[in-house]
Image (cartoon, rainbow, N blue to C red; front, side):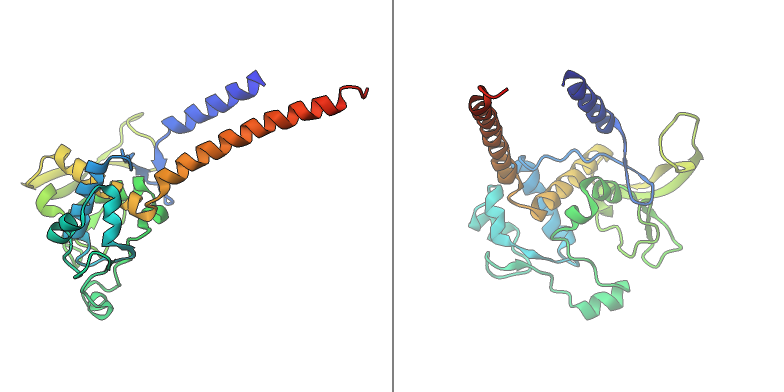
Length: 248
């Protein structure tokens, strides 16, 4: 039994220290999310409504759900209610599907459960991977999603960057990529690199929370369910020993 626990601990520590990979083999940045951090969730909700909800929808989420992250109806209505009239309405965009198809070539995906579909690390890497590319229709490209149809809506915050690729030095990084991607800022943004990373982190944090608003409660309930089951297993084992103690 001790050996089993030791093996589990070793395997767990191995996966905890490995870099995340996308389905195509790209190395992903770890997203430092915490869905219990209400300040981060509120900041992420503000970024989402101001920058994402212009084109994307979140048709499975209501503005009223923001009460769960510490916002009042007055705060929601005064600061975040841009695409609806009532707090109880869904987070939809005013752009029609026809216009979206014409402007972007494809209808922007609904973001209600995008974090569950893509993963937090993928979204965090994606938001930090935009660079200027004059060969694309939008003038932007992304290291994680080449020739993506979405322009860099946060460019004013991050600034304008161009990509530089340098041969990967031996032992410099993991993954199948043959080059290490490096960026050069040609027009500074309103935020420093660290400040922009915080904005990206807060936005991803909110998307993760929006995909499952009750995940914290679910995990807490799950812990107590496992605790009770553990007690029942012990009691069942003791009862079995009592029934069979005289049988050899």
